[in-house]
Length: 246
Length: 225
Image (cartoon, rainbow over all chains, first blue to last red; front, side, top):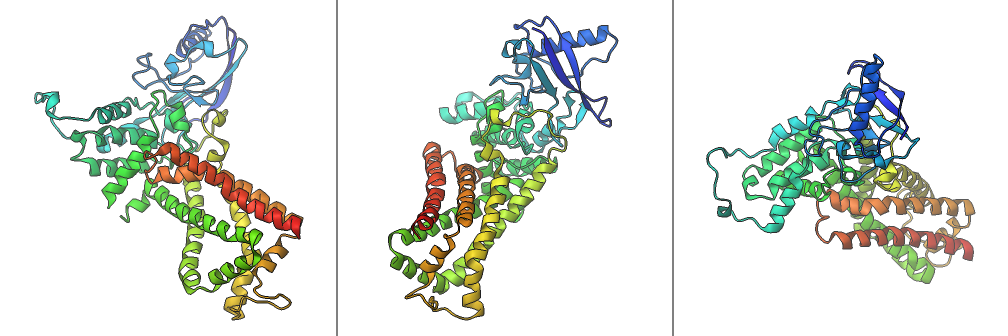
């Protein structure tokens, strides 16, 4: 496949960026999107140009590091995958692909396609944990009975890898799917009950402080989420906050 | 609780609560207006009751005005805050791939409805306030009209094809606003897990039936008078 790439290039957070066109040739349809980016970077290095900076780590859809807004969608046109799991077979020979960083005031661009997502870490630090020393004190799992549907729903919420696709996709840059998932994974389990009220209050307060927008329930985040995190988590977070506020 | 309404979620809940009230009001308004098609006399009687009853006039009407003003002011505040959350727009954004046009453009449909409310106030509400509160005439009658005046006023307004056209367009946008807003309000108050499918079906039916009812009334009177 021969492709034209329109990529956002930005030297650093203080400089203005712009879209730059590149050509890549002989791309295999079996390559992952990041492998295609590797080919481009090799080409750029060989010609003495600065390679395109992009985030990646595990390259198997687990770590949540890769990002990229590809042809107007977070993680590209495929569903239920991260950018590293996106294959070039989703594109056609001769296509022009637009590649941009995740855009949000709370995710400032560090360089090219790399954005600072530490706002998510600060939200987690505000309450996304339980204050129990689990090290060396592990209980028998059967000593705390948990209903199967609650355990499953909590597990589904916990599959959020914090990649930020929800924020990137949302027309308001809202982080509510992420925060909703993190609140839900504890709210559904007995271990999370003790700090439930403080957790949701503090995490929502931090989310607002970071400058994310409001959720308008378009549902775009749920569609683009590589882990299929459900909007029900946002509804649950709203209920949890109401419960914590009365 | 005060802190709650200052949070992003609290604002959405407040928006949803005002929406619930307005959606209930729309249903009540349609129920009364539809009477004008079937029985002008009953329409006149009910309109006179609503226009002169002290509970409606001095308790419900102020709540309604507050809900309308609150809903659009809060809508603008939220839109402003949301636009600040993304300072650099995407060069290419494929919103249609993951959401409906009307869910992404609530502010647009909202502004159209607001423009309609202004027209509606000029047409009906301001003259009504003038007659009752400034001129002190609570009789519900007018010169040259036998019985109450409400049916006559309604019919008179729907003579102009321009006004009827504006009403139809506004109600189409109201339908689009409700098509997203109904289920969205329930989601905002955290209620959507309970009977989600039934709620969405009911919401879609509401978003079609209510605006279609108002459009029918406007067209009926325009074509029959």
